Image 1 (cartoon, protein in one colour):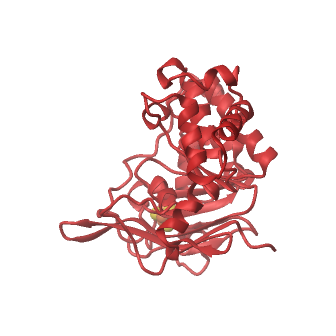
Image 2 (tube, rainbow, N blue to C red; image 1 turned 45 degrees about the horizontal axis):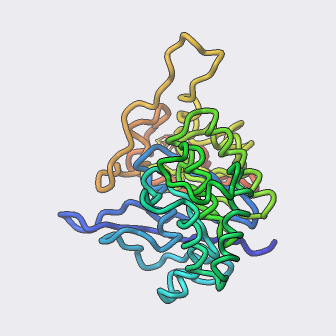
Length: 327
Ligand code: SF4
């Protein structure tokens, strides 16, 4: 088996708190193969975005990646790269699309110039070459009348077009990995479908791997090859899209799937997972999901469940799957 494009091992991130460091991400390990789309799913506050920022070494200060973590991209240890080398990885190796195109674009610079700047930062191209590359990119991401739109300011574009500009910027240096953090949250249903289709097309055409951060299983169903589910800072289940959506094994994944609105259930109350995600620093002992879990039993509050392999590609951390745990 070939080495993964990205391999994260034992990633923990802490912020200083009044009573000592507070973990927001806890011993996360995951990998992404070339050209693969991995969805990282969970409610807000589960640590998904912070995990993604760590891959770009952009954890906001005073947050810290804890010793013992490894993040390898194309075999290089990102955590030991110099600042200039890491800057070169950002953009050319790993591109990132943020949630809010409205706030990520500079309102006083044309969108063409903003993408051009991203290219000039990394590539030795003449201004004319860079400009024609931007126009080509705008075409690639489906911006109509790309030459004309080069000179538009963000406020002159719709939300969907702004998100396409952000994707063009992230794709400018043809990264091998694209991190997309809730890329469709601010968009209406039609534009959302178009942006998801664009991500799928780009990934297929350019063999770019995608790490998609989302809380929405509808998005997962449309684009993911594999899924990892996060809860209270840790990955509690992972597997192929078919396994996760068809046979979820962790009660949290099962609860998330039950809480999706379904057309045939119109008029019935939606099933919700009771309670809310515990805040960092207030994670329960044992299984962190136990206060919300409808299947919690004797060992759950006191003993942390270990990862149990369910198939070649699916695994989950739940005592119900672990035959060595006595009920
Ligand atoms: Fe529920 Fe216990 Fe499994 Fe946690 S370990 S998910 S509390 S059954």
